[in-house]
Image (cartoon, rainbow over all chains, first blue to last red; front, side):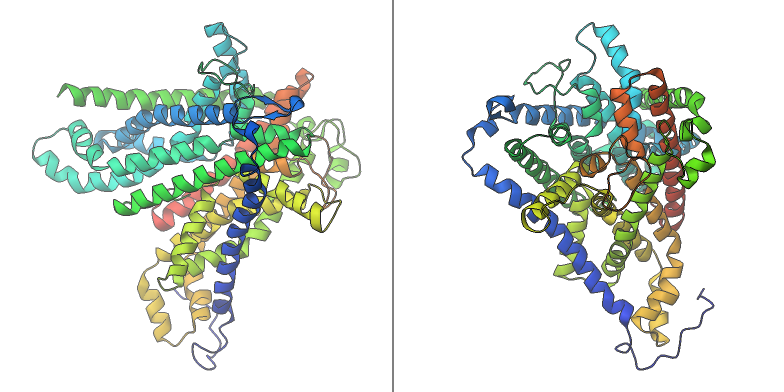
Length: 299
Length: 288
């Protein structure tokens, strides 16, 4: 179907007045330049901090009033949040994706896929406010420990936040596999659950790894949930019920309060850390998915 | 045998768990936000018409935040639309090369960025400007829109590229064989065919920009600014209003306001995302 508007007579050939097409490389180059500029600017501010010989940066003590700007406690909190959230989310994602593959649950699968799309559109701040008034009081009353604002609350909500992306990635890969393998395998007498558990899942190991990484990078990059739920005390602790502060929340908090430039240095270091982590995970995910021949995840 | 039974049960359990938890959370927002819905939620004690026309200030309503969100998102789209879509077209059209590989990688990396980094980028931009060009530069609507534009660029590029690659190659070949130039092929044949996918991408970008809080928190959103005053002024935005009042509410009324704003924002973004995924789903068979 060609649009009704007839193209004007082509004066000359392809090399003629090809303005639109000539513009494209410039636009693409501009986008690339912008992305490089983001990297350069963050690097420009962050690198001097790292080579400053600023010993306090790598200590776990954050006492800006005493000139101690350690961000290790925040690094630990971020790492704990990301690893635990993606480890909790993975079995759930496998379960839900598995359910979507059963032929007898076709209707439920359609409903679940619609729910995933809906969940992808729920703003984090809405999850946050719901958790502040539902999850936090519940944690406080059941555990009788602290105020309920703790890393565990943030972890539980981040699990819900990262599940849809992980499931969508797994589902898009496993559905194709199921279509290919199901007829043969069921003719051999395997039940649906055996096919999914013994055939589909083992052969989608790379995609499982990629979706875990995707969840991990989303979890480490989320700001609002840790900021609203984790309590934000800059302390090093192994107890999930303690109030903790992640790197992202730290950036938001320091910039929200008018602080002086010495504290900004710790921000740039935190930003550079986040930047490296997200870049490395993106490259890893790409490598894994292209190597295994799976469709690369769409943002 | 037993393991596959257990796996079957685990599948049912995890789906049920997710359904109930998400149902509980969203149901809670609806139940708490619904009573707040009404003219007073948006305009407070000001007459709606005066508030709409900006004749009277609105003190205890979320209308200014709605307008602020709308303006910052529209501006961000305006900034990102041409580069994003152009970049997507170029990625779909150009011959395989080192350049294309590099740009695809860059777009992917940008898509995986935590949004707080965009906010930090905006903040460092202001620091840089203060150092070298404008000593009194400050966070503003324009800065937020710029950072949001960066955030949604990859969405536009990726969806445009996917929509174009999903078209049958015969279209392109036929158009070229009929003597159309590359621009004509794009303008008259390929883009009209891919318009569903591209508009789906625009909706997705719109929703993503509307829900983001981390970026605007660092680059110019404040709790009390009234209607947006200009590009270089600070402004109110829905997500920031929700965040602010959920932590700093002084009275039951302000909490109501936060839940009302949350329900409003939920409706907007959920609507946009469903529409976007319907459009994208039909064109390419891809989920988001």
